[in-house]
Image (cartoon, rainbow, N blue to C red):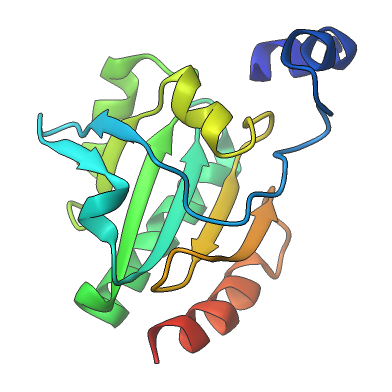
Length: 163
């Protein structure tokens, strides 16, 4: 997915997927997913039910993703169990994902996203992409890339979701 966009082949992606390739399609709710986290434990939407949920799609080759992941760890420290933070790697070698996860926070749930999961979130064609969901699973906000005010925007939304 991302490889096609980086290679300038958005049209091919649109044709293959039957939808726009400019960014993730807006989704109304936290979609069903079933992954295995880096610790070997199952990870699904049922496990985060009843909490605010932050899902970050990232890649090991994405420099802005690293600072976003470090910031996400601080959210977990700040809000504790009131928020579930999932860091889902895309198009990244497992060894590099494990290395990055090991050098950052153990508070995040780390997993490698498969194509089915990325598609369930509207298809991920850029990183970082940050999804925020309220306690009922409704989409509260989707943020693309790493603008200078990303953390401020996200924290403002998250403060309303956890209170």
